[in-house]
Image 1 (tube, rainbow, N blue to C red):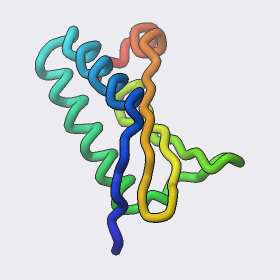
Image 2: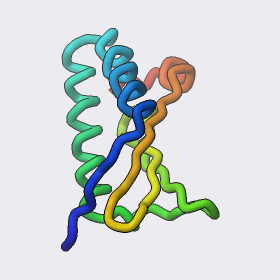
Image 3: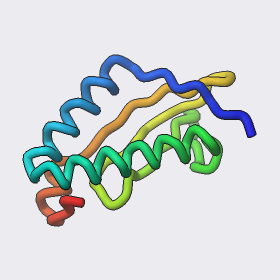
Image 4: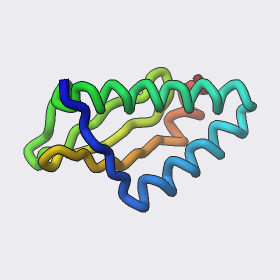
Length: 98
């Protein structure tokens, strides 16, 4: 099975760092669990990027479980471009800390 090459948008890399800092506020265990969940989700995407449905524009979204954070990506030839987002208000409102 072919693995896709991943390219990050600059904004996605910045959001990833912000998310790590945000989860770190809950402590080192939380940020480590989040990083592990993120890496595992990224590897699932890399192995089977078409597993998640695309919208009309070709954009796909995957929730990084159990966190309120999603990876947003699209496929282009044999590469994927990623953006991530998380909803701080949702995480705090629902008590989801990982």
